[in-house]
Amino acid sequence: MKMQEPLKDSNGYDIIESLPTPLIVANDQYNILYMNGAAEDFLMISRKNLHQYSLYSFFPKAYDVADLIKKVKAKKRAIVEYEVDIFTYNQIIKPITLYIAPFINNENYITISLHDYSIVKTIEEKESFHKVSRSVANMAALLAHEIKNPLSGIKGAAQLLENSLNENDKELTTLICNEVERIKNLVDRTGVFYNRTLQISDVNIYSVLAHVKKIAENGFASTIPIKTIYDPSLPLIKADKDQLIQVFINLIKNAAEAIGTTRKDGEITLIIGYEPHLVMNISKAKKRVTLPMMIIIRDNGPGISDSIKQRLFEPFVSSRPNGTGLGLALCGKIINDHGGIIDIHSQKGKTDIKIFLPLTGF
Image (tube, rainbow, N blue to C red; front, top):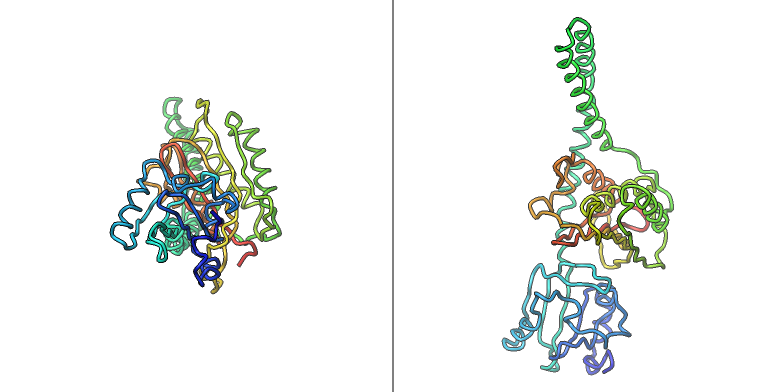
């Protein structure tokens, strides 16, 4: 059956084809008969190969899409489901809001529209994160000014006191000096949150990830295979190359630590793709910006706890007992400074950290 056949009698075909919302038409055997260009981009498949797919190709086995379609046909009205997981061609998990409705001209067909739930939620949270980021920068400056000077005095006094103590008591002054140094190091680490001017240039995202991949393979992820899935046709972006390298090193290192060094089937996947329909308001630029550049860091580790998933990029939040919670917070700040967003989707055995960036800055 040709792709356009379900719509051949419809004068609105051109309109449907140009809609930015992903739209699918399927029959009562759950075979996909048609999808518009937006759905093709969203699911990352070519419409030339539609005959290879059914609706079951894109939904988890546990999700009974057939039952939902039966309800739509029985009630003869649309049904909406929120936070439904769908798989793209590259097995990227996307939480969506799912609209299923009867097809007007043929009761054997149904229409399905897909709305990216995670992106909507992430955009709503972006302004809140931006405020937190500014607060952390101010806090870091305060810590540096108000704490480091007294710390130097405390350490100096402890070292002077040490000269008049016996060997047993010197252990206490050594402890004081060590703890002062630890606090000083923590304050220094918060210094990365100071507001720094981005050094913007034309950046090849492929070379950035290739560079970081090489660092990982020769260092912290030397025992873990790193796969790549790249759309080869994407242009340069306007960004701070060094800061992006810092972001991806942190994210891949976290993925490697989540997998661990003893797991034999551990794997990290780096994905570069194109998301043409994601647009958001950038308040400081006072304009709407498209965020088509999509980079995904995927691992098959244990997943992220629901209790911290939504707060993972906030300062001092960490999933590791010995983590400071500053590395990922810095990643969030850098991407936020670039006008982008970070989205997390995690389940047992699979975590996707998605980064969306503008091509031209803002």
